[in-house]
Length: 371
Image: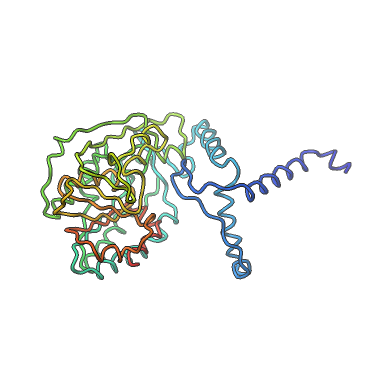
């Protein structure tokens, strides 16, 4: 006891650690990190086999890392302190020219890529009567290379995309060269500086390329009203917390629609205007990522498009309604029914599978394509 009284910081330190550990376990944890824009790990199930194989320990460590007390506050404090030290990289985000931010490659971003391409190829081969197109959107670091900081390593996305396209075409599917379409406009505002998504300008460029390849009429998008939101700081900023970040603006098209249904519920527009006042403004489009979303230009659709997608499609889909009477979007991450059951009773002129390269590499839900 005398020794403890002589060195009071020792019991205080371990008491602090023990208290936080106890609270981490007992308090209900969040399921989603708004700062990182991702789902957090869930509590692993403790079984004798998982304990003996040591798999529980690793899963529990991941859970604790995702749920320690005041987690978002600690992340913010770390990010702001490192920005104050004028570091050129923070939390895996690298600062580039013109205020651009880029996410460094890490193995987890491509861990499912090869497997997912095979799953898509299997899906295409299983539906030879349907016209299916795969489109993979490369990251900003591949298209806007002139903004990269010197020495930043860049994953060879283009080789991986070309290999994927070869597999899909061999299975009987179609592909879209998204990279070439965007690279021709690389000097334009096609990616957000502080976020991982593409902008409405990039979505329009892709829409025109896809519609031309599908043999569909290309609308005069210049006749559609464009609205704009200012002061948008996206997912890259939320991780890096750069003190001198240049906020983005979000443009979006006010397309005329007859109806919008999100997870079976009618909505007044394809975007949630209330979300524009929150941190994650991009989540307003399509009201987030529902399992099934239906956009209709007319209530008696004659032409229909199905998009199997990640969030890159959220700002794109309304544009495609100007060439298709109905656009149905399926997000496999939130889909609660079997895709095969849904497709059995539905006819579509085209099926578009659209993912960003990093989503295609890190999303394990693409297995649901073949359920």
